[in-house]
Figure 1 (cartoon, one colour):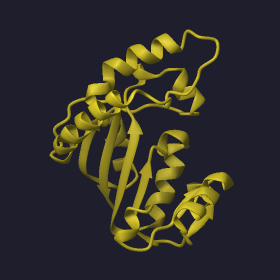
Figure 2 (figure 1 turned 180 degrees about the vertical axis):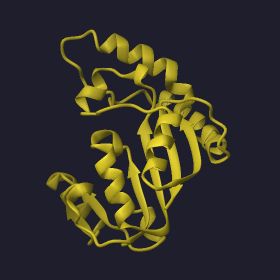
Figure 3 (figure 1 turned 60 degrees about the vertical axis):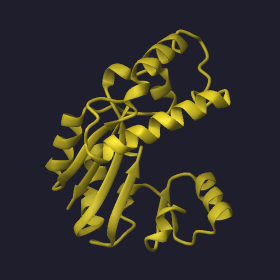
Figure 4 (figure 1 turned 30 degrees about the vertical axis):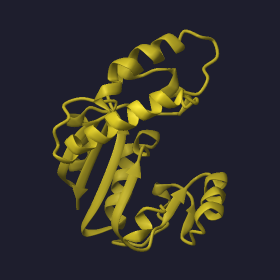
Length: 188
């Protein structure tokens, strides 16, 4: 939200009071709403841009995309990120309460069905596919499942940041053929 606020007024929507409280304390954001996207909180054609960054997979996708279409202005932009590939499903997806993972074809089909034109679609984090697959499959064998967001040695973070920066260049050009996540930029 902080980065996006340089482009205009930013609204935040979350079903967690804790998340909204964190945003208020951290950024002093005024336009924060408690609820879910399907609550019909906003007027028709209200937003110029809507971002759903790792949100759709937690919701009933048809209701979410219908409501998103209703509140997005004609010609408005929707940016989505979701986890990719059902074969990467693991206990971590269950911990996060994901309903599904997507292929590029499946995600494009569902957003187009709801009146959006896909402008750009690409996978992301291709360099993490195999490490995540093996790491999560091994971890899923344990009776307890600790967070995948544990602190890593800084050398790993430096290395993965470098790979992410290189891949970002390729994603902008739509050239990443596989990855652990998907990004779609759509127009109403």
